[in-house]
Image (tube, rainbow, N blue to C red; front, side, top):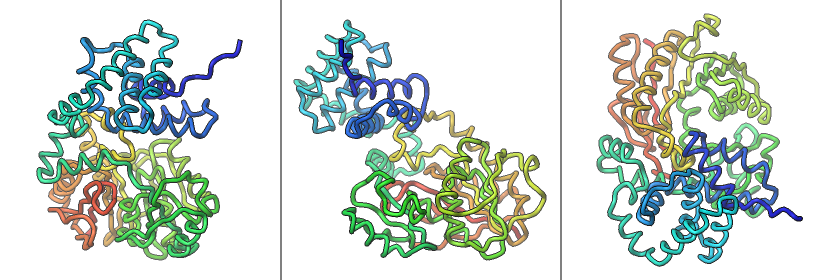
Length: 433
């Protein structure tokens, strides 16, 4: 007897269940699940569905609740219902195929077949009414958890709705051209010859955006280090840090290493670059990235809040502190953040940022520059964090950032998600006086 291949909708539902039930990240859950899927079109479908359900989870979950008399307790089955609704609401899958294939995914739970069939067919009949109901409930309309909507409205009352809308869009594929190896214009020509149109990005000399995302292995010269994947906002760090020949540079909380590599691409004549991260596996990604780009840095597994366990006592002229944060500025790239992050996480992260900033400050040489960065849009993690630090450290002065991107804040400069096509990011420069 020939065994029927695993239903790709069931695989997607299992990925989503690992996020909803076990708190796994979408990246981790997908990576494990796709190893058993051979066809690239099946992999692409599973990935599209999982990202889409996470992106629109709060809307789909509301609609599902209207189609049920009582909640579905089985997480995998609930995820499967959401997979079906996502296909019908957001994908170009023919309704009969979406329903029949999703129902088939219940093969090992025959009792659930009728439930999934009824939910999806009732949605098709009541679609207009259900979507209108969702449009009148903020959590469903904006597809964000209530706590996050409230936090965005508090910090950015005039921009909250636009931030939510930007979070729900698919992020562009932005590349960082290795300008030590060739010009951005030349690389755009290389892409065009292979049928991948791209445009130069404003505000950043090394950034370009592809019209359509493609697999990294298809990028010309990727394996040889001509280009890397990195959002424009993250690329700005290396320019703001402004490293000079002969300097010692510390990149703390360095993984996955995009900024580390960019610093070295821009300034190969450093005395030393030390990249520190607390996670051994993530630090390995830094080393792998540097190897691909044919760059060298010293890497150390260490706790940024306890530099006495890894620091050799020599001061640094430049420090990049890419602080652990809520990552609310990169939701469009990691939509599972909306499902995994909680309101109570923010004060914990704020305290961690404070402890790291305080611990790392003594490592900066007099006259040196520390660049504080987050991929958050919350003021607690950003300008308020810097205000508190400056008030407590008379030997610290802010170096204002003059730029055409983002907006000047009471301290530092904030990029709001989606503005000029960038991720949400925050930067502040601190000089030791």
